[in-house]
Length: 115
Image 1: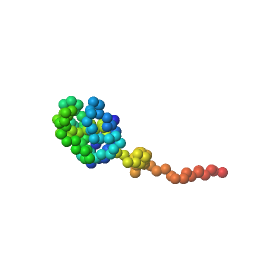
Image 2: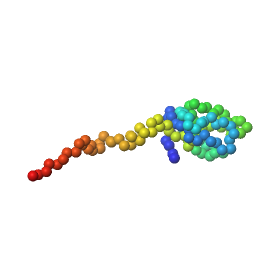
Image 3: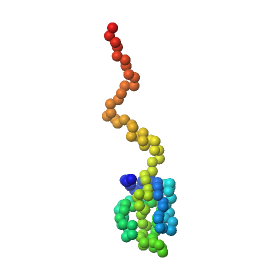
Image 4: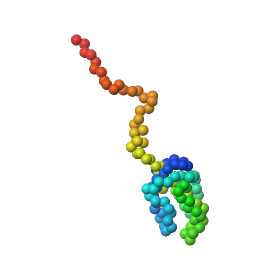
């Protein structure tokens, strides 16, 4: 699933699992974060991807024994989804009539029979 992200947007982490990485990556599934940067990023091992940097986390330089030398490397955007505070309300908006939609009468009137 692909989402459109923007700076200042609240997102929730949906994937905090990093295969073959023993260093804590600081994000937690179910936690809410704020995007401070979004864009295309190219990593020499992971390739090119859409990444996000979070206001709550500054990853620093990735120059440890298992690091790749990247400075404040972004997370893959696919690890997050936009935060929807009230899922039911967002679905109700889909059902809400548009201003130019025809309105049905509240009470139906019976046709008078001719005698």
